[in-house]
Image (cartoon, rainbow, N blue to C red; front, side, top):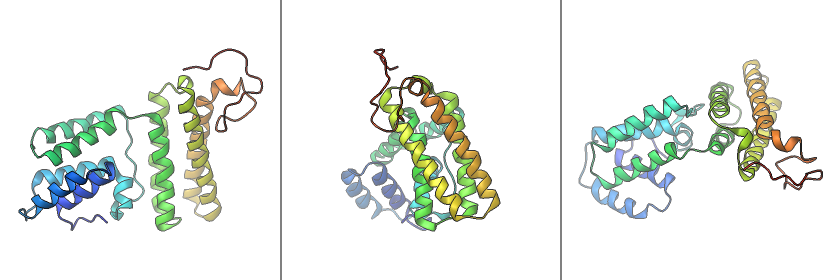
Length: 239
């Protein structure tokens, strides 16, 4: 598990291996280097802070309890701000491990796709339930961030004209989120949490309707099952 008491090199190692499970070579080089280093460098601390801000759900799963109930909201402004920080750090280090790790963060920002948003909400809720059960305080905060992620996804993406395979993926993730929210609602009496569940559920349903707009008028089945249209005409689906 990651804790702030760990050596910063070790923090960077764990984070790097999470993003790239094949980073064995980086692992060996990092272990050799850290034998010669005792004092954390400022840049290592800064890289670690950037990773935690970009991946608070990962940080929470790795043992940093202060990141419970948090999601990074990938608005254009937030992405631009984080890319600026990362590029500044890349200009200050020549270390290959640090450079590689920072490039991987750039990739997550520059090649971001809408299924990532729904997946992050889905698996972060699931991770919180597995780790600590129904914690109203953390879940209210998490759902508030999740609602902002959904708002941003609907604002910056052309959901109606996504490729079919992406629509299928999104419908499955929406169904999963709604299923988890139903379970949580049945397990809690917390009024604020129930209110947050209702608000996010409405946004997920709105997201599904927009994503499913073409197929709902063409098909008699839901999009999250194999799209065999019983009443489909000969027209091609949107690409």
